Image (tube, rainbow, N blue to C red):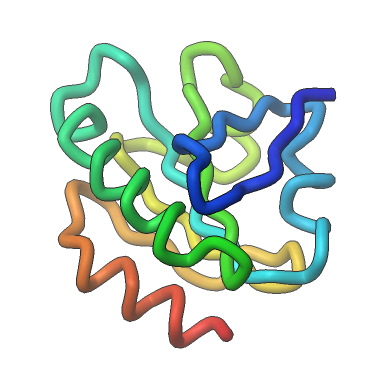
Length: 115
């Protein structure tokens, strides 16, 4: 299993299907998961924002990305139809989604509301 620990110096964590549930369950912290793809322009634009949030929310929330081309079963499981889709989890349960490129302040506010 890939190490999915987020630390202040860590880059955006990439989660696979085989460690997705463990990633969400670890320590009960809220999680933001971006479902995207390498070929997706808005996903590439969202990546630096997610990296900043991973550093800023280290110890408070988990931030990750799922490549839907590499993990189609996760995309199907969560009904992903548009990229990027930003999914917010609390206690391992999906609480909210946003579709499309989102501002850092919007994502930070959503994460704070989950705490």
